[in-house]
Every structure is written in structure tokens, then in C-alpha cells.
Image (cartoon, rainbow, N blue to C red):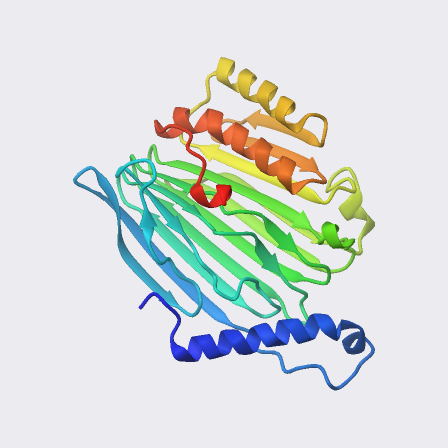
Length: 314
């Protein structure tokens, strides 16, 4: 069943009411009031498997528990590439919620996974929110993980573990745009904690491992080894093929043009992974920079034209 059950809908409505009440009474809660609403964390799991059948990539297995699902697969660029949009009906993650996503691409399948909007991590209320992502890509296959922005509210406590397991010549492209605080409302990420771990293995060998731990109240977060006082950072990871130097030079030039001085851009090709970074204060600029880099490199890695995900255009 793809839509939430009656009990799940009731839990979602109840939890959303808690979120709203929490934001309206944050000052009262901090002062130690006993009227703080009861905490109701949610758990959700989603498992997807894609396979290439008769020159078409199909979603052959899907299983979900809780409010995390894929309603329908899309084929905006033909039958070879299957697009899946992961939906989280509550619209945000509150303290204590636990999400788990697994995606498998069988041999020669081509998959792109995105989200319909920004992910929002609300304040912690003394509970850690967790997200686990497991991606497995077999030989000859490609998987693109390109969700929209992630917004970390002030006072959040988040732990994210992202693991990618590749086989032989499998291609993986992953993009993340992280926004710290709701700057449009004058909010900065001055208190809270974010822990994130990203690892990529190929044939059992780790080719990329990155771990970060950011504390809003620590001066180090705004230091040169972290965010340098900026509020938005973005990372694009690509692995599966070596990028020719002329193309890499072009990508660097185009990325700088796209940023147009509104932030810093860097692109490095390591032995097994190509990494692109953006650091600035604009999620819109970050999006344009990441899309420009992705658009130039996607054809080289996947053999597919750079068609912007439909959800990113709505």
C-alpha cells in the first residue's frame, strides 16, 4: 500500500499539531513550563529496487512503513532512465523521528531519485532525529541521488548516515545542498548539532569517507575549516569514470561564471571520485551552480543528456 494508512494519517496530523504548537511556545518551553506538548516521534522506512528489463528501467520492488513512499515512477527522458520521487507527507522531521531509505539498482539499470521540495529538520526538543540512506548499484548501472535542499532549523539535533556500495563500473552521482538556519526569517543556526557521515565503497574498498560534526554554538563552525561564517554549503560527488581534463577545465570555468562572485566554488578530481563544492549564503545560487556542474558532467558519466529533474523546476 503506497498511501499512509488511517493510523499513519492520524499520527501525521497529531505530530504536525505538535510541531506547530512547539514553534508557537518555544519561549515558554525554554523557561521550563510544564505545558509543553507530549513528544510523538515517527519512524518510517522505504525500500526500492530497480531493474533493467527489455531496455526499460523498472521499479520492481518497493516496500514502505510509515509516511515515506514513492507514488509513481516517471520517464521524462525515455524508458531507459527511471525517475522516482520520494515523498514524506509530514513535510518535515522533528526531534526523535527516524527515517531509513534503501535503494538498489540492479545491473544496467539507470535511476534518478529526487524529492518534491526542501527537507526541513525542526528543533530537537531533547531528541535526536536520524536518517539512514543505503544505496547499492551493480555493474553497468547508474544511480543519481539528487534531493532538493535540506534546511536545518535552529536548535536541531540531527544524525545522518549515507552509505553507497558500488560494483565494478557502477556510476553514482550524489548532490546535497545544506542550509543552516532560516535566513529568510532572520534565523541563524546558532544552537544545535548536525552529524553526518558519507561513505562510498567500490567492490568492498572504501573510496570516499567524509564525516562532519557541526555545533551551532561552537566558534569553530564559523572558522575557515568549517563554514567560514556562511549559511549554505553544497556538495556534488561523482564516481564511475575519470573526467577528461579539458572537460574538467570547462566545468570549473562555468561554475565560477554561474556563481558570479556570490560564494566560493571548488572542483577536485581525486583518484576515484570527483568532488564539487559550493560555500556561500544563497541556496538559489548553490542550486544553479550544482545544476550547471551536473549538467556538464552527467553525459560523460551516464551517457544521458542533462535534463533537469522535473521536481526541481516546479
